[in-house]
Length: 405
Image (cartoon, rainbow, N blue to C red; front, top):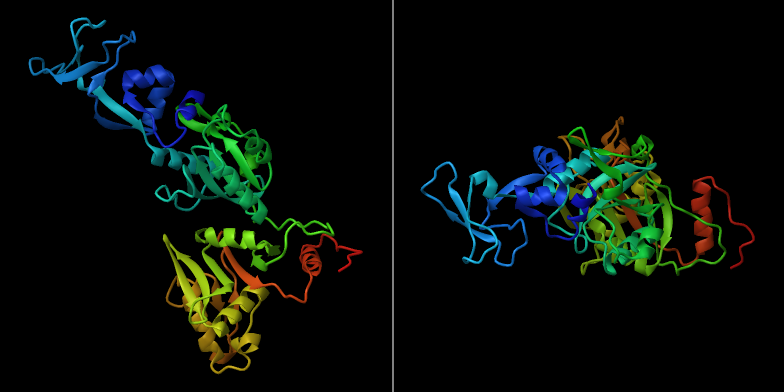
């Protein structure tokens, strides 16, 4: 399968007649790959290749109306051609092309990828979002990258590593021009690149993985990585809260997160407002990703639900204590950011039972697999070290000591 995956580099997909593809990939591989649908029929060939590599070839394919059993004829361009004219069947001039969509479907089966692939929206040149999958204990986003050359892949993957976004990059094959830094930095860890030529084989007429099944075991979202270094590597700009916990972001990291916002089903940004002073939010409903806006009361009330993740009546939210109709404010925020899944149920924000309508508490509890986050203003009176200690305490891994500010 190495020759097959190496032929898939870049955006040009291999194609040709069956005889051409058999020479390139081997007849023993071509037949099962065709049966799997990885090769799909294309147009009839207009040229027929020369088996000897002659300069006067390839021969032109024309119709042969005199022979219904062999309705095509491959003729050399002149009488000095190294090959004679050849009568051909339609099957012999039929071309075949690799189907990227079928390949992606096979990869989804092999790697347990869920979600919809977006092959028409490259993340950067030759890189496509495939969905999410468990990999080595982490729930990761999966990206198919057909070309790892140049600086774009390294910059993109480094930004994901900085943000702590668990990512699995499926690359077809190594090349001699590929960055050694990229291969070494991302061979293990939160952001990992694996090469399909190393792990995918053809066995019993089907594609299979040559990997320990533990790599595909059920995964939980990754908790943020926190160190006890007394000197932060970047200047804190804001705070990002998600299912993985709370962490400080630099301004560059914040900009990178917003640029990559479409991967979130629900994202609330308290760092950015519209001209009317409303706060920006983003939500995904199916394949539709849209920007929404909320009033300050709605935004801060919903952010409190996201942060506390416990049953709270609308009147208990600090942002709404001095405002009328707290329930209406929460309902408006829920309509803006959340997605309705039935007549009375919403995807992430649940209204629990209570004796009176105003006594019913709200609970922010997204289902597993929903990516959400809220970006908050960093308290200028709170040092980054205190923030890190809060994160460490929340994950019970110890507290920084002897920190001076």
